[in-house]
Length: 275
Length: 306
Image 1: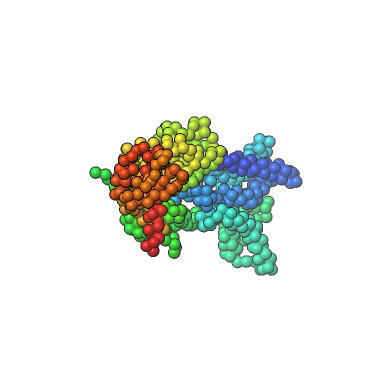
Image 2 (image 1 turned 90 degrees about the horizontal axis):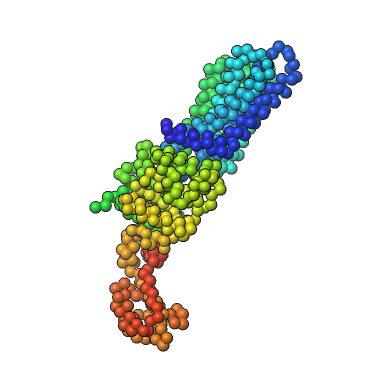
């Protein structure tokens, strides 16, 4: 356990030094503030809680940005250190390979969590500071949005490690990561939409649609944040959410599984890898 | 009685169809400095990785300080120091932070790190700069410092002096002498054979994954039966004719320099003949076969045997 924390601490320190932490926090804060003030302008005062609008916009932003940041952080973690030669030295110390992976995971997750919490938190704080009234249910959805955004980040950090543990070169890891990002963020949904259209109004069986949504972590995240409460009406996701039998527990479990399975696979791949 | 710290028995390691090391056995003792010599790709690095437990042998067994280094919680590595060939660090961290990180992993009190940085000659000013600004020599010094963390019982050094300037090289070898006197086993792999010559108690020569020689330098010289080279600068008017009596063949290197090669057992009698008339000789050099020569010899006999 101590070794894991030592590695995590080193990753965070490196992140601070590389300005990764600063850059991602500023990026998320800038986009969140822009969305919450400009994005709400067209709606005017229609009696909708402003924070709910922010939640809808930020969730959509998260789906694009957080996986990208997570993959950028993680795709280099193993193959990059091997290429640079730092892994050889690290593994000559009394530390197991699983501890290395878990330590890195914890460190990268801390960086991402910090950026999300402070970046998005800035938007909520700004809203509250400008005197917008926010009720407690909206606050609850906002906090759950923050938590699930970090969880979505964890999913893609784990996927990034799996890629990083399997490939021989850093550039390959980068390419595959971009492919994965495109697949989950764009292509998958387009294909799903295409399938729904092709079905020609015959709705897909609820079980199948639910399974298809769970097979993409970004869809699970979307359902979790946009499928219920005020946000569902605003985003128009309520229709789908009502059609499937997916509730918050199943969705969170799916996101956790999406983290644990790639992380476990990354650890086994890494432990079998010859130095 | 010296205690063995590293025992390697019948170890083979293959990567897929390529075998990197074949049936290698050797023992290293406490307080011994051993040179591991071989071409690039001869299996030196594989042997070092096996000793660290970074890779497992396909056959045979490796015991370091009585334990299998690849098993359990790697606690034996706390008493190992390792300097990889062309050592690399995390670029964004400073030298001091890097050393503190490795110290924590080895559970070494980080209050000792400034002293270590001082010992390897890394100035305090440099220690607070990020590693990315370091020259090759400075990285090498930082690499040495991390290898020396926690007073290791076994030190594995892969090309340790590459990138160090001559004064630092001397300092480095002084450091090794100090460690050796406290009973540390040191395994040095290097191409700079002349450098190792006075430092190594023993030499291990590997070629194509096979150990082809193992012994003290004198020992190997005896085995190789390489001749000693004697060169003489003739005084004015002197001639080599008198010295040819013993059957020695002299060749002229330059106009007043002559050279011959003599077997170990005939060396003393030849020197006696030479020095019978000191006024004939302006200068005299006796060159024992160097590690370079020995290395070439063992490689060649190996090749001839195949």
